[in-house]
Image 1 (cartoon, rainbow, N blue to C red):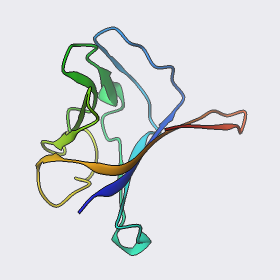
Image 2: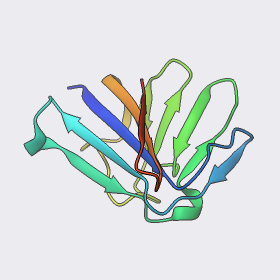
Image 3: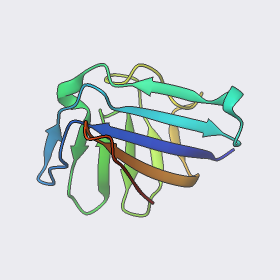
Image 4: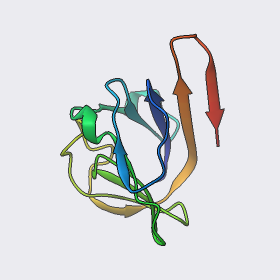
Length: 114
């Protein structure tokens, strides 16, 4: 079962040098099978460790060390250390149908990258 994942990033700029980016308002949203009733919203609970860009050969990004994305856009989940909930029932590797990064700012504009 694949998901549609939304990564919402607010109040920060992406920093790409082996470090965490801090944000209070980011969350991960999983829309399973396109059904809103099966969706999971997981807000960041440790803002200082919200997003990590490893910038290494295999791992592209980590969301609080709970959700990892590799360079081939495969995903895997470990635990819910820094986000409130697991966005899937099981840990381990999985693939997704659609991935979107949404960045918003106080100027009320929205940019979506796919």
